[in-house]
Amino acid sequence: MTVDLADKTLEELDALEALLIDEKSKALGAVARDADIKDGFMAFFELVFGFQVLNHQLGALDQILSDHKEKKKGTVIEEFRGAAKTTTFTVGWATYMLSRDPTKSWLLIQAGEDIASDNSQKVADIIAHSPGYKIAFPHIVPDPTKGWGTNGYEVKKTHNSYEDYQAGKSLSYEKWRDQNAGRIGPSFVAKGYKSAIIGKRPDGVIIDDINDENNTSSERELLKVKKILTGTIFPAANMAEWILVIGTPWTENDVIHYCLQTGQFGHMKIPVYKEVDDGKVYTWPEKFDEAQVEVEKDMAGDIEFARMFLLDLSKTKGLVLKREWLEPRFDHKAIKINWPAIIFIDYSSTEDPTKEKADHFALAVGQIHPDNRRIIISDGIYRRVTHLDAQRLAIAKILQYPVIYTVGVEAIFTGSEYRNVLAENQELIDNGIFPEACRGGPWQKKKGYRFEYILADAARRRIVQLSDIENELLTAIPVEWVGWQGNALADMGHDDALDTMFGVVHLAMQFLAHGTHYKEREYNNPTYPQKQKQSFSFRRQNG
Image (cartoon, rainbow, N blue to C red; front, top):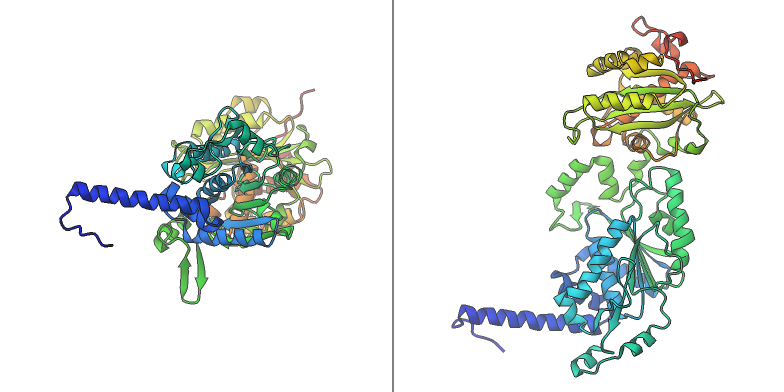
């Protein structure tokens, strides 16, 4: 049937458009309720979110359904940052699946409680308020008497089916509860991975990006996450019909890769583009075209772009400085405060500490192990600060340590002025601490020599180790370490943490049993003062 629009008024055209939209919505609702999972989800998603499932997410959906058909434990989907994976699956897929069969329960697991709460609230808002949801599933509504909050959300059927809803055949609450007699836990709940989820037996589990920069900063933190995964999350999900692990990779020891190593999960990678013979094929060209991808690359830096957008971890191993050279980390609980300390400061300040391009004020504390053969980077500062804060923070940190062999400051440009200010500080003078100006010698050489020759050799030989404590400096060192590429600046343009690590190692050599393990002869020149222990500050422990 055709309709002649030529003689229609604007009001009539608006009414016709509204009618067509209404008819389309009804059709999408019917497909969402009655079709198979793929077609049903596509219809539901468009009805609720107002746009179609993205093409690359349809590929992920096909992988999930194929793995389920093959009775695999679940599916691992790696996706580039900003690919809309959380909207599509953690919110959209979970909402659809629990509505398709509200007698089942779903558990959403994320990195922290805040983001988990935000996404569970999105699911709850769709069920409670979305007009599109009410078209598809008008007979499924919140059950606030049973639970409707961050501890768990309950839904209920007011009618056995959509057809009963149309016919006015309601379902008593008692009969609805009888249908749920075998279900353990709420209809859906979202938790941070550290939360107590013991006792829950969900039918579907979505693990969404539970690794982050904090819990991947050391092997110790990665092991904590794996312990929770294997000791809490997987036992809770042992009867789950659906398990989806989605996220962006961090390291080869993260949750994504652990799941893949079990051999029980299907797998799909969705990078921002793929290389083909005649160029690049962009995954989501409407949002991440060539120009936008270049913007993201400039903002992230080569290494983080490779990880976050190309899902390529090869660069995170370090092209020059290998990540494994920093492992294993030293147990911070075994470190004693009275182990002799060597402190090195790489001074930088800004009157606007929030300015992104400013260097960091960095201070590293190294403590000599009782075996006298290694130094542990145990503490430090790494942040953008004003000149006054740089003084205050350094003095407070120095005075924490009862035994100090030396405090060194890279005395180049403004660092020289900063060192002079510290040298005149009465508190430091009263404690017998005289900061040394470090210039000449290795500080006259390129950073590539300092990091790749001296520092890398010390790390490989375990002469220097990083503490496994969570600390801003000890988090920054591995990032800059793997980001170092020859004489180029570290990733994101900063190498301040590496500068302080090198300073500690260089100053420590004279105090260790094998002090001249690197080629000392290279420093035999008249511009470099020969090291003399008595010239360094020494603070004795009280008593």
